[in-house]
Amino acid sequence: HDVRAPLHVAKLHGHTQEVCGLKWSLQGTQLASGGNDNILNIWEARRNHQPRFTIGRHQAAVKALAWCPFHSNLLASGGGTADRRICLWNTSNGQCLNEVDTKSQVCAVQWSTHDRELVSSHGFTHNQLILWRYAGRGRVHKVVELTGHQARVLHMAQSPDGTTIVSAAADETLRFWRILGSPTRSAAKLKMEHSSRGLLGANCIR
Image 1 (cartoon, helix red, strand yellow):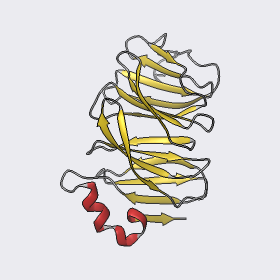
Image 2 (cartoon, helix red, strand yellow; image 1 turned 180 degrees about the horizontal axis):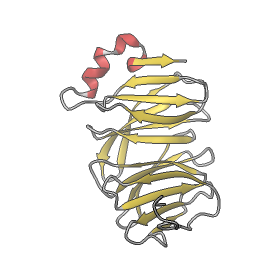
Image 3 (spheres, helix red, strand yellow; image 1 turned 90 degrees about the vertical axis):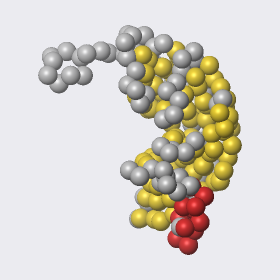
Image 4 (cartoon, rainbow, N blue to C red; image 1 turned 135 degrees about the vertical axis):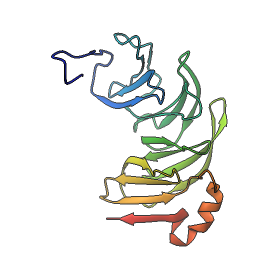
């Protein structure tokens, strides 16, 4: 909505229940929306009345969405408690490249800005974070599971230098995980440098 105009620029209809996930691609050409109706929609900025792809692969609400910074048409999506999967999508043709059962509700996904890695945060049953290595063509390999939160890990944000993930959970804590690489230091080196702070360099604010 353009606040200078009396009418909406566009109004999109693609979900039958609440929209709980929304993310623009880094180029601003595509928009991903996820809903409590278990639907993932891919919209194009130049074609804003109907979704280009409507995908019903997830079996629960689609809240977690993240566009890859090094492949413009690569999207990661995560499903809720009844689904527990992370799916990797080629949004140029709507193809699912891969899906991974995480064994827990997927609440958020975040790509590393420097490495071919992504982090997912989870709720029931383990309330963990998982660091994944992207191996290409939609394939991901689990690097490590990070535990410490006592309730659903609802949100994540990445530090400006790209090395640290901060997670916010329903246990009323923020935890800082220095687990991602930087342009000058690898993730493995950072993990070694900060291992004395706790599990993979995690600090906690309550």
